[in-house]
Length: 514
Image 1 (cartoon, rainbow, N blue to C red):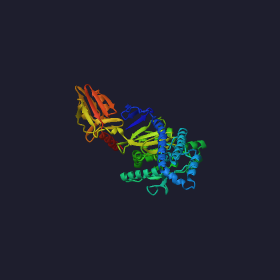
Image 2 (cartoon, rainbow, N blue to C red; image 1 turned 180 degrees about the vertical axis):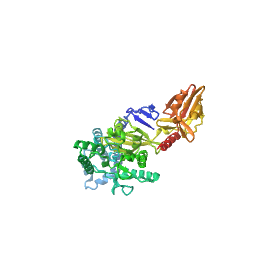
Image 3 (spheres, rainbow, N blue to C red; image 1 turned 45 degrees about the vertical axis):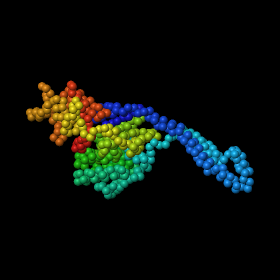
Image 4 (cartoon, one colour; image 1 turned 120 degrees about the horizontal axis):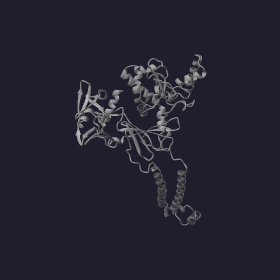
C-alpha cells in the first residue's frame, strides 16, 4: 500500500509502507499540454474536412441537376429559353448550371459557419471534462466553518427503521449510506448473532435548531450562564447547519437505546471500530481529534464516506478534516493512490480540483466537498501488477532458494521467513531454552532475537527484514520498479522478488488482526 503524488510535470513520487520515497515514472510528453496540441490539430483540420465535404456534395447536386434536368425544368414556362437566361442573369451567375450554383452557396455558408465555430472555441469555455451532475455529495465536510443551508435536504432519503433494529419508527438515511449500513448490520448480526440499534439518522435544520436550543436552555436552568451553556452544548451538539445528521450520511448507534461513551467497550462498539471502514463508514469524532473537529469524543457517531476514502482515513489515522486538508493540498496533476482491497488488480486514485474543465479517466465517483471544490475518485488497473509474478521468488546470487511462506507487510515492516533468509546469508539459527530466545549464529558471533519480534504463521517464524539486516550487518535496498528487496552482505546478494502471494498474505494477516 502506498501514497502516490504526481507533480504537474508528470513525474511521480511514491511513499510506500517501507518508508521508501521513489520516482518510478518518466515525465509524460508535453506534461499536461497534450490536450492543447490535440485541440489545435482539430481546429486546423476541421475546416478542410468541411469544405471538401461541401465540394463533394456540390458534385452530386450537379449530377442530379444535369443540363437535361434543367431543360425539363425550363419547359414548365412558356418561353423556356428566355426564362432560363433571365434566371441566370438575376442570380449573378449567367450560363451557370444549378449544381454549381448550389455548390458555391454551400461552400460560402460553411465557411461562415466554420469561422463562427472557431471564434466560439476561442472565446467560450470548453465543455465540462467531468459531469458535475454526477455530484453525489458523499464527501461533504460539515462543521462550524462549513455549514449547510437551512433548506438543504437530500432527495434520496430511505427509511430503514423496518429493515434493521431502531429506537424510532422512522429512521432516514441517504440511499447509499442506508444500503451500506444494512450490509454492515447484516455482517455483524451473522458474525455475532446480536443486535445493534440505530438512534439517530437524518435530522432537518429545524430539528437540529430545536435540539440545540433546548440543550442550551437545560444547562441554563441548571445554573450555567448563557455563554457557558452555549459553549458546553456546542462541544457535544452541533450548531444548526453544522450537524452531519442534516446530510443524511451520519448515524448514531447504541446497544440499549441510549448514547454513552460506554458504547466503545461493548461488543458492538468494538466490532464497529474494527469493521466499519470496509463498508465505507468512519468514526467521525475520535477521542484525540476534538481540537480539530470541535466535537467531543462520540464512539456512537459514524459517518458514511464510501470507499476507498474510509480505508485511507483509517490507515492514516485522520479525521475527515485532516483528510480534506490533505486533498486540498494536492496541486496540479497530483493525486492520492490506494489499492483496491477487494480486487488486487485494481487501484483507486483520488484527485481534488476546482477546475471543472479538467479531464479524468475511469471516474467512479464525483463529490463536492462543501469547500468550493470537487473530489474525483477514479478506478484503474494497477500497472505494477502486470509484470509481478504470482509467487514470490527468493534467490541468492542468482540461485533460487526455497521460501516456506510469502513475505507480507505489517505495520510498515516487511515480514520474511526468518530461517530461510538467515540460512541463505550463511547464518545458523537455533532456540535457546535458557533465555527463551531465537539465536542467530554467524561464525563466533551470536545474535539473540526476541520472540516478541517474531510472528508465527503456519509454524513458520516471520521476522522484520530490517531486524535481520541489522543482526547480520547487511544492506537492504528496495527496487520499486521491479518490486524487489535486495539484501547485500559481503559478496552475497539476496533478492526477494515480491509476488501476488505476498499481497494476498498481507491481506490475510490484516484480517486476522481485525
